[in-house]
Length: 454
Image 1 (tube, rainbow, N blue to C red):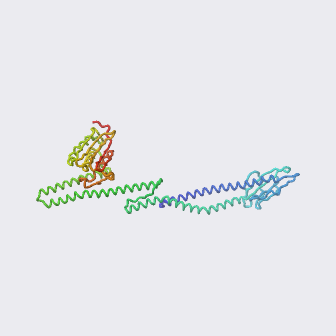
Image 2: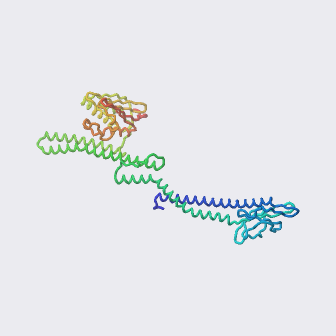
Image 3: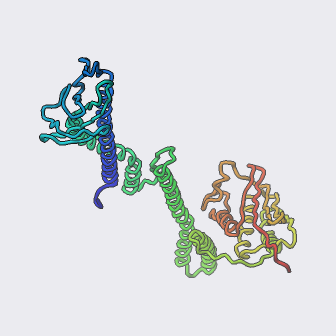
């Protein structure tokens, strides 16, 4: 059976089970039928013997037997004998040896002339005459022949039942495994056509196969999302690296073409240096995110004074904000301490502040606040800049996504993706609220270090 399909094996087991069940049922029915038939014959024989009491009487010592007393009825023979065994009335089968000794009140089985007979004797007392024997006899073959006919009928019907059970079992099993075939076919088509948008789509169901199909559909959705993000990541990374590489090549060629002009050479080298710095920063961010995706980016766990860290980053970014005419304000509660990676937390604040500066409004403001709320540290970076459209709120966390690349200020679209990962790596969350034309507020929350003391 190892090479059989599951449908074939289940069909075979189902058929064997049904045949076994039918055999047990038939055996029970035949046994019950035989007992019922035997008891029916005995009841008939006893009834005929009992009925003879009212048909036999004696007058003046002479026995009188009513001619209405039946000597044969429904295969049962009745005969009457005196106390010494002399036949007085009735019939016995021609092949029956009537020399059997009388035994009152019990059903016996005797063999005579190659036949089997049921024999029942009953002694009655007739007033003014004495004791008489009433004997009833019937052929056991009549009961056995009925059972034999039923057995032959069953043997003829059983193969039909087996075939019907096999066909029904096959159809039921094939129907039950139809979702499995659909799963297999869909998986094969996805593998052949590389179309991860395909789904099994069994619909609603509570059985194990529907649950399995639902898990497969969810897996296909995750794979499609992963491949889509990988393709988008590759395209975006190529696009972001293409521009600085082209600038580096063109400036290198220009410097080589004008070796005698120091000013031109210095300008080219400065441009090359700037673009190389952009590429290095982009590659560093990509490397960090790639390690984070694989779970290989180490996150240090040490006590960090988040208040001092936030103030230091704000002081550093104030100059860049002032260059764009943006006032950087702070409202930092002292002594807020967390456990985490100081470098990554610094990167989180830098990315949020630079994002606010990049999309802020000249002459506007950018505010960094930090406070402790219960067991959590809550930092908010708010601005009155251009804001974010509601339909883009879910996209800003995607890598390389930019609502308005022309106003990105040279960003690659990785900053907020890094912010979300850093927040989650520290057991925290980051959310955003924004109104187009009025500004945005990013809220970062993470657990505070309760046991730390300075």
